[in-house]
Length: 198
Image (cartoon, rainbow, N blue to C red; front, side):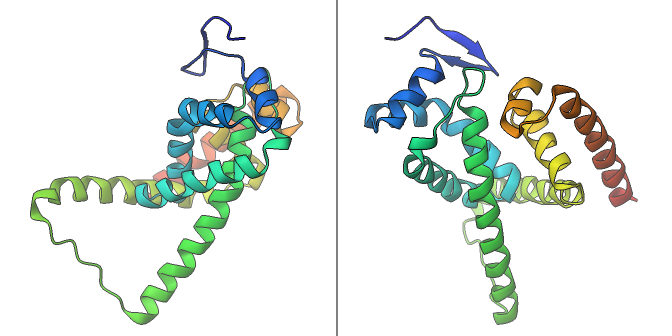
């Protein structure tokens, strides 16, 4: 039932996602394993760009695929790709995780908990990760100031690699609207990041 390899958004697929979605809706465990193998990395990166923490992104990615299994009857491939549907599921899980992480940070602040990193040989890696997370946090602050729709379109196209058509189908809006909102969102984020550097 597998077709020839297809290049889509930088991913090589061996079976059309429409067929994979059908198998998933039927409760095929192998289809779920295939889906995870195919999309774990992009979903992980998607999660990091929403929660700004590599560790939290790992946890959230796991939750995303659990939720995907629970919601498998609703699996739908837009334009032959399950990515828009996966990103919609991931967006909801990330939103909940970010809310929970904010509550944890607030609690930790109130309790004045101190987190120690005691392995010097990992200091460079820890410093790099903290720097990445700091930069991502600053970017997320800027992106958070966008309208919900502009933010969603920016993330789906610029960060997650969906095509304009896939985003238009997933959000049920015209392709031209995707283009104009994306342009507006990019300009606004650039301006906000410039303000933050001053």
